[in-house]
Length: 341
Image 1 (spheres, rainbow, N blue to C red):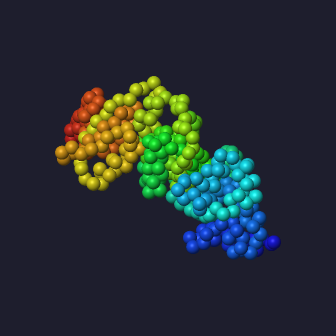
Image 2: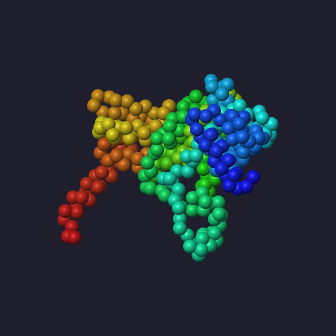
Image 3: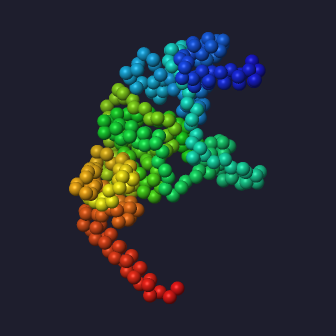
C-alpha cells in the first residue's frame, strides 16, 4: 500500500470515527473502508499509543450506558493486557470516536526560528518534541480568563472530592506531551497571582493545572475504597498557592457591600473551589462570605483586588491591618497636594 493510499485510508477512518451519524465499531469501519478487521484494530492501537492522539480517542461500551466505564478505564488499569485484548477482538463492538480539538489556540504559539536561534535553544536542552508541541513559548497573561470547559471540569472535580469518587483525565505536561492519569482528587486551589486553578490526587506528588486537562474529566465508578490520606488533613484549607503544614486554619468573614450581579458572580467563581468548606449567603442588603483558611497573606491580596467592594469583619487583626493600610494611602494622597512636581 503506497503512502497516498495509506493517508487516504487514515483520513477515511478518522472521518468515520468523527462522524455523529456513523456507529464506528471496528467491524463497521472495516466494512465501510473495505479493509481487513485486523488493520482497523492495529490502527486503533496506533492511535492509543500516539502521545498526542491518545487523548483524542474515546471507546465506549454500548451495552454499559448506566456505567461510566470506558475502554480507557480498562487501559489505565493494565495497558499490556488491554492492548493484547484489543488486537484479539475484545473491543471490536465498542463505539469508537475521536475528538481532534486537543491543542488550545489560546496557549500554543508558533515561532519562526532562524538556524542560529534554533541551535541556541537546542543548546539549552530543548528537544524537537518541545518545539512541535509548543513548550518553548506559552503565553501567560497576568490574569487569565477561566474557560467554560475548565469550569465544567472544576465542578466535576469538586463533586468528586465531596463524594470521594475517582476520576480519569488526559493532561498536557510542560513539554506538550499528553499523559493519562487517574485517582481520587482531594484539593482544589486557585492561584491569586495568575488565576490558574490547580488540583491534586490523593497521596500523589504532583499538582495539576486544570487548564492543561485536554478533555472532559470522567468519573470512575467502583474504583475501590477511598485511600487513607497520608498528608496533613489541613491542606484542604490552603488559600491560593500558600501552604504551611504547621499552620492551623483561621476563620475569615467578609461583607460584600457592592451587590452588583457581575461582581457577585465573579466572587462566587473565585470561591468556587471552596465548596464544602465555606458559606456564602445574603443578609439584608449585603452578601456574607465565611471560610476557614490557611494563607491570610494571599487572602488579603485577593481582598485588595476588590477595593472598597469588600469589608473584612474577621479576623480582627486583618481588619485592623487593612484599615491602617487605607489610612496610610489616604495620608499619601493628602501629602501629595503639597508636592511641587
